[in-house]
Amino acid sequence: MDTTFILFIAVLFAAVMLLVWGVYLGWAAHRNPEGERIARRLRNVIGAEVRELDVTIVKERGLSDNPETDALLRRLPGTRRLDRMLQQAGAGYLVARLLLVCAVFLLPGLLLAIWFGLPGAAWPLAALATAALPLMQLARARQARLTRFEHQLPEALDMMGRAMRAGHAFPTALKLVAEEVPAPLGEEFKAAFDEVNFGVSMGDALSNLAQRVPSMDLQYFVVAVLIQRESGGNLTELLGSISSIIRDRQKLVGQVRVLSAEGRISAWVLCLLPFGAGGMMYMTNPTTMGVLIHDPVGRQMSGAAILMMIFGVLAIRKIVRIRM
Image (cartoon, rainbow, N blue to C red):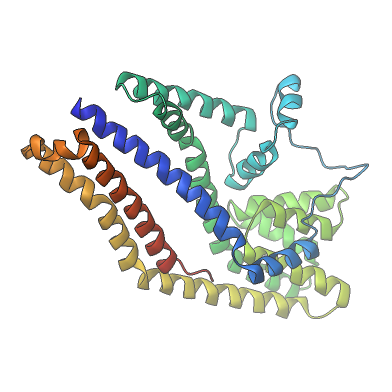
């Protein structure tokens, strides 16, 4: 019975953490009006707003290999966002498979909640906590791919600048980067070059590139190239300037991460220490720790401590995470 309550607290803690984390991310995305204004202007310049076209030569990506399932998924809300997330993560499967994996992961959480005798209200929380694991892994893969892309971008811009300095045109420089730079940047630039070869305008191809890769550095590059194509100027010097700015920004981000490493470690220690200490105390003297599980006042104290811990972790994250 003691093990059941301990697992219940762990599952409840994970579910509450996911809920609070989602609410916080939604709030953080809209709390900065100046940043939203800049992002909106960038979306307008690169044409990121979705437009319904009567005719397109670009094959539309499906959501499932089965036509009936694909038609059903297109009517569901949020599937387009999942598909875009899969593309940004470089995943080789479709939305239907992702949803199937999430549905499969629902079962272990539900079975564990039933097996340990958790209350009925905790069953959906346990199932959703395990079902969110594939999405969390996909988000991590997306962020890792984006980080690799941003690290490759300055060298790619320098390569394009050297190619144009040698007399090549901009599409040829784009092709050179696609052939010489490894994935993921080479793959995305190759897709943009293929679109140009198939008849898509350079502006639309670059806008599609900026939509596939949610990188602010890449959006600066796309906006600069689009403005230069309309107003003129030395694109070679412009690429060199953008490359230098991106390198300086990445260097500053690295310094900030080093300086904030102590705060991040403190957050991990403060988050894991109570559970580690509580587990050791429970192993040595179960009666003492059993008060926090069996006694109603003890459970209330444990819940209050978990809530304060969540707010503390969010506060530390707010302090150590500096948006550049």
